[in-house]
Length: 440
View 1: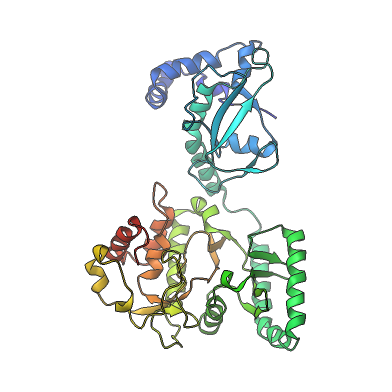
View 2 (view 1 turned 90 degrees about the vertical axis):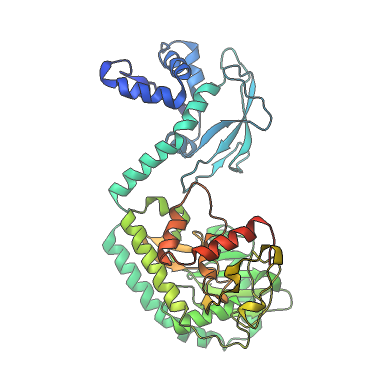
C-alpha cells in the first residue's frame, strides 16, 4: 500500500498569521532550513515525479505502524553512508521501533521479523523513473514518531479498554470456579503412571506448538489452559515448582497453579495453569495515572501476601526448595546462605547499606513488566517464579528495577509506589554493583 512519508496537509495554512506560533515551533524543532525544504517538498505539484520521493509501499500492518509513529526509519550511522537527498539505487537505513511500547514486529521480504536498530536496505531498479524515498522526509518523520505514538496512546486512554466489561466479568467468575477444581484434578492425575503423564505432556507440547506457535524454546502454551516449561533439568529452576506450591498454599495471589513437576531421564516437565492477560510492558503506557496507582496498590498487596509465607528450609537465603538462589545478577546459582551477612560482595564495592540488617522474606525475585500480567487496566496475575525464594526484604524492589533505566520511567515509578518509596539507599548501592559487572 502506498504511504506518504510526511502527509501534505502538515504544512497547510502554515504561513498564515494565525499559525505563526506553530511555524515558529516547527522551525525550532526541525530547524528553519529543513522546514523550508519540507515546504518545498510538500508544495510540489501532484504530477511531478518528485512526489514519489515522499511515497513508499508497505504491507498493511507496516502501513498502520508507520503512520501511527510506531516505527522509525533512521540513517545508518554505523556505515556512515547517509547523504541527505542523494539516494541512489540502494540506500541503507536502520529501523527502530521507537520508545513507546507496545512494539510491533515488521517482517522483511523473507518473512522474518526485523529487529529494532537492524540495518535495512531500500532499493529501486530505476532511480530516475522510480526514485527512492527522500532521506530528509524519513528524518523528519522519525523526529515526530514518538509524539505521534503518544497522541495515539492518549486517544486510546480516552476511549477506554476494548471489550465488553460484563462478558469479561463472567469469564473471570468462570475461571475462579475452574480454579477451585484444580486440587481435585491434580490428585486424580497423580494416579496415572509417570510414563503416561510424560507422554501426555510430550503430546501437549506438539499440539500446543501447532495451535499457538512456539512461545519460547523452553516454554510452550498448551491446550486446556496450560503452560509447560520443559527441557533438561538445568533449564527448569529446581525451586520453581516448590515456589508455586507455597504461593498456592499460603496466598490468594493470582499465579499459575502447579499441576505437575515431572523429571524423566532426559526431560523435565513443569506443568502449570495459564494466567490470562497481557504483559504489562505492552500496556503500561495506556494506563491512566489512577490505574497505575491501583496497579501499585495491587502489587503492594501481593508482596504483603508473599511475606506471610514461612520459610520451611534451614537456610535463610535460598530458593523455595532450600537450594541455591537463582538470580540473573549473580550469574551461576549461589548459596544457599545462612544469613544476610554470608552473602559476599566485592569488598571494593561494598556499601555501608550492606552492613544493615534486613528481614528475610519470600520474594518472587523477578518482578518485571514481562512477568506482571494485566487485563483491562488491572493486575490479572504474576508469572515466572523461576527466581523465587527467600531474600532480604529490599531484593524484590531492587531486582524489579534492574535493567529498567533510561527515558521510560512508568515501570520504575509504579514499582517505587508499590514499595512506598522504600529501599532507595539499597537501590543506589546495588546500582554501583551493577555498573561494575558481576559483583557478588
